[in-house]
Length: 116
Length: 115
Picture 1 (spheres, rainbow over the protein chains, first blue to last red):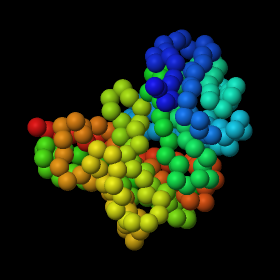
Picture 2: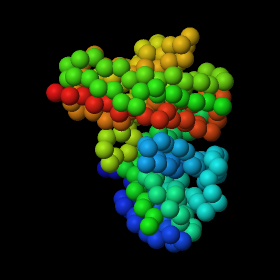
Picture 3: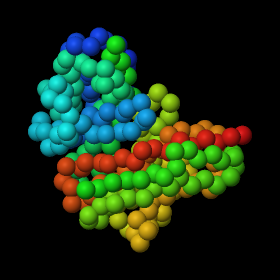
């Protein structure tokens, strides 16, 4: 049983296109996240959602927008794709962040986005 | 602001030898500290965490880490390395006062265990 799943696994597209990456977790977690891992493997948080409320929004371009239809899903929409958006995008989830003993995050397998 | 440093891009160790992957951190308050491992073409997997209590934390796959407040370090260790331990390791920190659970990751250390 997959805990955190992402689709698609690979995404190749042209500059200027709009694309979406889907994420689902079946862990019953309260918070979901999106991370970007660049070619040098640096990992940086992009968004965090807790009970449909955005609680973290790092300085990412507004071409990126997270959308959470329900607690189990946090999809990432990207408009007007640019070459620099090429990276691996990871979804993650965790329990209530205020509950210290449940702070570890569970990551999806990643989506490799290539913008040509 | 919180930050994490992993000073070594790569650590090489022979199978059966002990290994250490270094991590130092900076937070304004008390830290929550984590180690994650990433195998090729996979997502990150949680290894262990320090929240409070004993400074020596034991985690998955025989790994452990020691929290040292005076040196602001949280080095990852294993007494006897396996070839299958070869992977990318990330240290992460969260400020205990940060209600948003924002994790800051280090740059990663690639561990290479040779037979």
